[in-house]
Length: 189
Image (tube, rainbow, N blue to C red; front, side, top):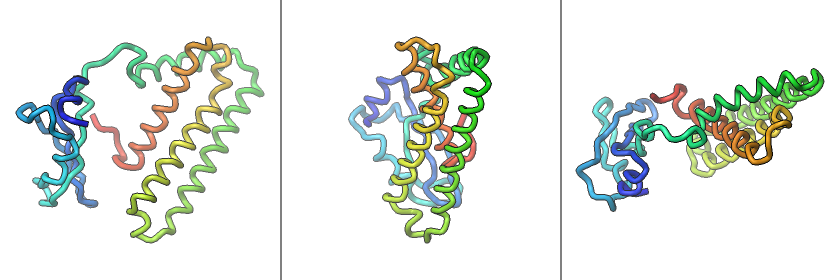
């Protein structure tokens, strides 16, 4: 992604996070003085942390400054609608269907937890490899897909044209939650 593309999407600054394993200092950097053709990732290797002095950082668009979009353009807004729809739909579901959804979600979470626990025994070189990071992300995606499928019965009365939006919002929020849990431990503001 270039700065020009980022600006077209309503973002004018970068979120820079220190690359040191022990630091993770986070700052926002105004890049309005740079040309449109500059690649966003090119800033990362040039950064020096003002807290620990480490060279190299993660540079990403500061999506938090982007203006809110329509209701169906932001997953968090859709998640509110999803929650309301789920509450309405759950009252109409039979108790055995509700129990089946809870059991499905419990099984999915247990499987995912076991899968994550099995990776703890790997040595440090394997944990930091690109292949391991990709495998972890794929595992998170599979978990979120299974999580969404467990919730599908809650939306059996949802119209066919709205169902992909609702399930997509649940999937997106699930992936966001996993990323926050894995990398930040708390949501950035």
